[in-house]
Image (tube, rainbow, N blue to C red; front, side, top):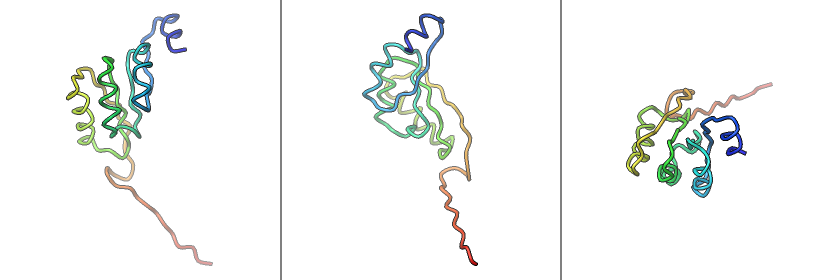
Length: 107
């Protein structure tokens, strides 16, 4: 389907990959491989998309600081990657902190 869209509309195509096993097939068709935010720390996936020869877009997890994204970029570049894009997605409750809110209910 992505190949058809690319050919018929003459557009560049970007798509998410969630596992390294998806990278080779997607790389045959798309121009840019995207790593979803929740997988932005997965070294195997970051290295896999870079070895594809395609441009890479990494979505920043809202739980990640800008400094941590430098680590993700460095993983891709260390594998020979030159075209790496980042998508900023904001933050919630500050970086690197999960917040659990609990409330006692009294009758």
